[in-house]
Length: 411
Image (cartoon, rainbow, N blue to C red):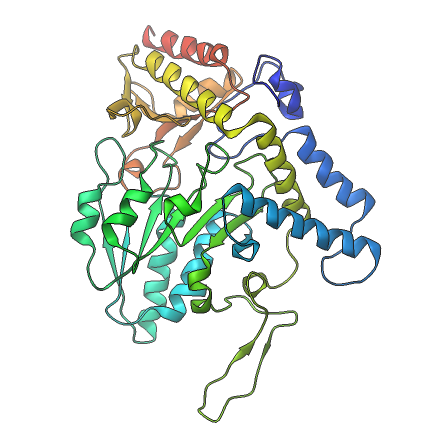
């Protein structure tokens, strides 16, 4: 077991080599530990080959490695079958895949999709784009918005009110990338029943706390490797076996082949079973291997330890920000009555734009995120500052950041 202490930074070369740097942007991407980088280097230097394309030693080692990581990911999110794990380029790619591999082939005129306008664009735009695409071919689907509360959590009663017999799918977020709130997804499943499919953006939760797809009750779950210590360009979408027969490939190539039209006039696509049905072409092999190493690293720390560290730092940060009158919080734990906190806090600072504040902090080697954070709802109405924390952050780093903000109040 790897303890989180003041020497923990040594596991991350980028941070260890720049001791004075304070990295507070882990919701955007995490730093990479030695073990992950070593795993990628081993692939490039010792057995660089493609998977499933040869019967020689290197190719077989790659194939076995990918299969091993697939099984490891399945265990990590408590999937029942490794075939439910589809490798993608990240959360955005996974959410788009759901829209086109499922939505394009199953939605009919009059069907409804419930979505939250305040979510990350990757959880909204694929459905807007699909709606426009289907409209060109005479199919009209309806996108019904649902609300969040002042504390940044999904309004369950609003979902209950908006769901109808025409609702086919609801897009959800597990931990919001701006508000930092954890949503009770299992409760939503009980509200809408089993007929409605649930798609969950888990980019900010997987790797921060234990995620169990069985307990959540969702049908799709998407996350990114680079937000949990793995390489960029790597992600996973878990898809429940109960809907595998509703899926069609949205990318084709390799050994996938379109057969001749049948007597009924329909053309069928002969292809692999899941998960290869949705994995046309060469996968991001080093990225997938890095994901396996990242899961090992997380398991060595334990998710319980990571979650507790995140809560401790988040409330420490919240307490100190609340002492600064110029700070105005966006929805999130600052307004919540429940003990939640998963490393994300967003705010405005009176007297300074978010860009100005980001520049001032950056000049002192403190890296935060500024802007609208890939949203188009209330968080997009004005640029804000987002601080996001992870295992390599400390209370001392928060103190350093707060000291600079306190100085600005007296200017």
